[in-house]
Length: 189
Image (cartoon, rainbow, N blue to C red; front, top):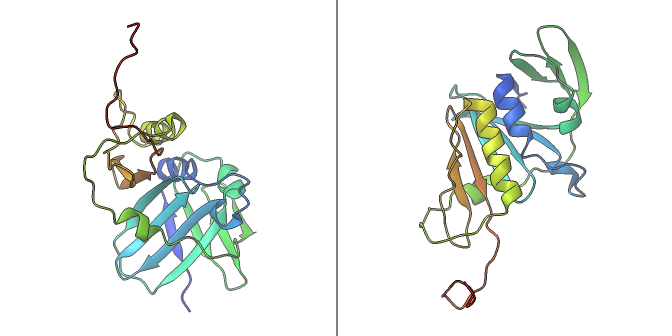
């Protein structure tokens, strides 16, 4: 079985980890999932409501995956790229310009994220939780330092999409809104 070995830009890493679960009972989403295969290497993070995916490279590799707990990603203090090397003993070596440590991998199955991101965007009105919209905007600011907010493509009751630039994409589940189809101002207005 192959092991993952990849280098991720620090801005991409810091943007992705915003989407990871934090002390979630579903322990396997409390981190960064990295997978490699014939199409290249991807990094994915989700909290179960929003997900971010980054294409790290498009180099064909033997299939392999690993998930690193967010506490180790949060602890990285560097301005440069970080190299992750999966070891045979269920650990990963995290190497920066100044340090190298080995930490345990999360032992669990990461959700089937491809099923979520394959939804076509309909443009049908959707409502998004402001915290998730702010998270998407913050991630975009880390990556691209844009002065305007990032727009989430609406998709009704299915997942909305936002291109954060570079090679990072975000998806967010909408708030389920039930109306009689007509939303109007209150009568006193």
